[in-house]
Length: 184
Image (cartoon, rainbow, N blue to C red):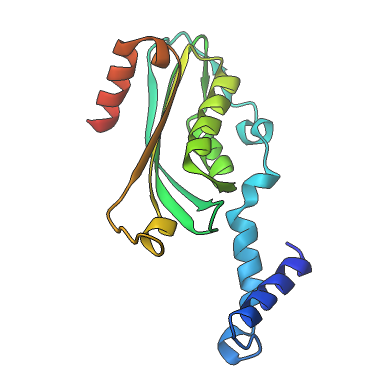
């Protein structure tokens, strides 16, 4: 976190007509800079470090699903949060990934300025890359504050995106099984 980022937040407060030296705002530029650094920490993470060699040999060749991984990201268009959940499935081909690593992969990409469509694809591509799975399926469901707090102000809207790779794309039965297990 840089002093420069803190100074930018001070300028934003001034631009809004606020007094950054008033009691309630004295430390706000520093707090906001720290918060933004945390919310975008995914820029300082890489797939190899996140996975940390947690790939294990396995003779399982049946679908593995991790459901309802909560995610928090920032819309790259308005810098407002979108919040939701992610479902990840893959079909192993001799290797499985440590359970927590899937959630860490989700977080690594979510903790960047994003659009949900790209986030979904980045997660799927990363899981495919580290597992060499026969197929990967990812579904992200999220509520976007840029649509809820401003603009059209639709409070009950949810965006759903999916990426299907390998067997999830080729096989209707595999895709249907994934969707049924996620919804069930």
